[in-house]
Length: 149
Image (cartoon, rainbow, N blue to C red):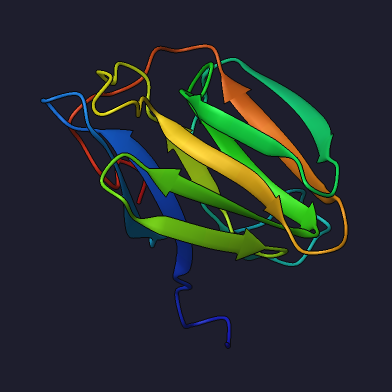
């Protein structure tokens, strides 16, 4: 990609519809500006996705880890650093992700249906999954997929 070509970056959005069912939608960041972070640094494509307060931490899911049906505690970016994990939404869609893939977990406000509420997640493969989490202080947006561009 050259400087003149605006980037597009994919992410998965786990969201809740108006009936309280979670879904996953493939979305894309496409609102970038070519700007410098400092006067002496060459410009790079930047796309600010939130200015809200946030907490950043790293979690390690051991081999064989399973997160039974649950909602994300807060709206949060989940970025795999190593290993693989999968997420199944209430609509039955299962997405497996690894390093370089991004997910935005915003499935708060789901309603239990057939023993399912929120999502089911697990570590995949023979190595632990290391995830960086960026958790927002603001409440979720409901009934809206792909809210970040």
